[in-house]
Amino acid sequence: MERYSRQIALAEIGVTGQRKIKGTKVLVVGVGGLGSVVAQYLVAAGVGKVGIVDGDSVSISNLQRQILYTEQDVGKPKVEVAANRLRAMSSAVEIVAYNTFLSAENGAEIISDYDIVVDGADNYAVRAVAESICAEQGKHFVHGAVEGFVGQVSVFWGDRTHRYSDIFEPMPRDEKGIIGATVGVVAAAEVSECLKIICGYGEVLYNKLWRVDLRTMNCEIFEL
Image (cartoon, rainbow, N blue to C red; front, side):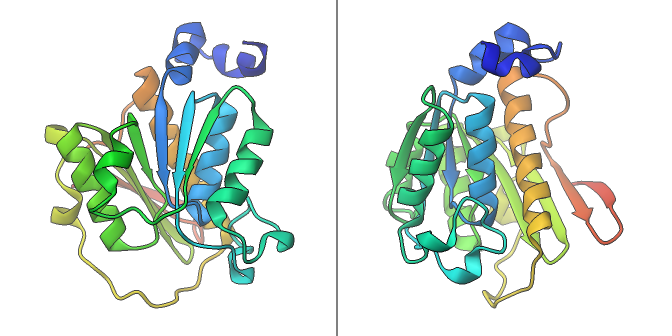
């Protein structure tokens, strides 16, 4: 427990909370900008099992915001590189890599083995599929999205929340600008929501959308 002593020192977590973290399995859908940061924080926090699913390869344009990768990784499958780095971070965490894109065909089987699913995807279709399967299986879906200097986070969970597809609509998939810091802030917030869910402290973003604009550092919470 010494490794997690600074977490355990928090009354909201303690030894009991740390054991809950160790006993939890979290799937990260997409290990790009958001997912590569989310996965590192989950491993560092001591989550017992972290799954990563992504069928993409590392490209040079990823490196500005996908901080799990280096120039030597360009062209390699993201999940293979990510899994090796995450295992090097902690031998106490089980890392499972799925070198594929989450879809309606494979999603139910993959998600069935996890307690929480974290959104690291970069498109509406994958998010909608993941959230739909989570709703069917009674799993939490922690949503995060970024664009430019703006990011957002929400949490969907069965009957306690609206459905993702009821709130958000498909958008054109064109290349948009972004700074890496936006990704880092939003990914950290997603992990924070995971820890609140696991340990049972604070107010989880059910039926709420947290939005941050890094140009002004203005944060808002909207009721959904």
